[in-house]
Figure 1 (cartoon, rainbow, N blue to C red):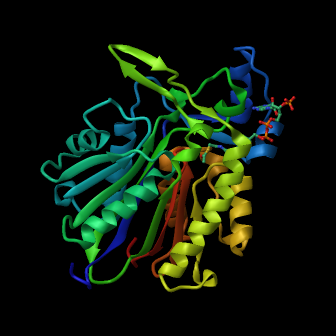
Figure 2 (figure 1 turned 135 degrees about the horizontal axis):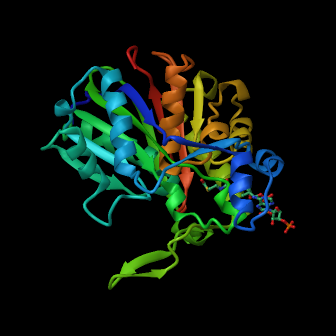
Amino acid sequence: MNPSRYSRITGTGSALPADCVSNAELVRRLAARGIETSDEWIVERTGIRQRYLADAGTTSSQLAAQAAREALAAAGIDATDIDLIIVATSTPDFVFPSTACLVQKALGAPGGAAFDVQAVCSGFVYALATADAMIRTGMASKALVIGAEVFSRILDWNDRGTCVLFGDGAGAVVLEASTTPGVLASRLHADGRHEEILRTPGNVCGGAVIGSPLLTMDGQAVFKLAVTVLDAVGREVVEAAGLQMHEVDWLIPHQANVRILQATGRRMGIDPSRVVVTVDRHANTSAASVPLALDCAVRDGRVRGGQHVLLEGVGGGFAWGAVLVKMSGDA
Ligand code: ACO
């Protein structure tokens, strides 16, 4: 392995479906099904004020390709230069082919490697760490790393404890080989013993769905575990990069719930003003949440070249991870 070969983020992009559903509108839609909730409950427990929901014709690959085109434009490169596409998703278009292959086709960029990563809400961080490793070992030079979801498809709209929490969308980054370090360190973990606290326990067998194709969650167990592991993996990756926590300019954790974001920042000693929060606008978009939040913070000028950004994912599996990035000047 070439010790001076690194990867760095050179462009970001995102995509959201057209239907922006406020809490008030969601309350109306759920009331029509006989499900009672309120804006007050949702805001107080989660910080969510609205979410974007895909219509029946919109797929993860379409949102992913739209986000990818934005990221390519920001990086100033053509889709044909891309030799690796990784899509993190739990709501793929098909059982197979992979959503990444569909994105590759949509972008007109055949020939490179393309595959999906299934690590639920930590999927983007898993995908980014994988792409970084592939670039550093010389297996790829220019990668698209995408988180894309139509999570609304796997929600039980009769379960008010979960259906108010999620939204749809996609976020993407272009990751390019460089002699200057961009991705400084990555750490990934999982503990399958907790697989039951957050799951969609169905599969397709003989043309029928076996089990349930809808999400179930033990919210309080997820909350406690998420806060603990996000703190631990954040510290681990900052130490691995040889930095101190006060040198982290921005913390971008998985956008599950504003109380998890606040508790994570507090435990790590990161001021709330340095925690990027988009869960109020997007709700929880699972694998898309971290790249969506990163793209928002890049485009609104908060995240700038030269800054250290700590990206963290956590979710079903139970799986979690973190990537510490030094943003390049032109990202
Ligand atoms: N509207 C109104 N009332 C509701 C709603 C709703 N949408 N959902 C639940 N309630 C009620 C319950 O029925 C219950 O009523 P009861 O006391 O009369 O029985 C009451 O609110 C409390 O329910 P809990 O489930 O105990 O609520 P809790 O305070 O734990 O909040 C929440 C639920 C927000 C999910 C919380 O557990 C949490 O933040 N968990 C973290 C998990 C998370 O964010 N998951 C996202 C996906 S996982 C991930 O991305 C990592």
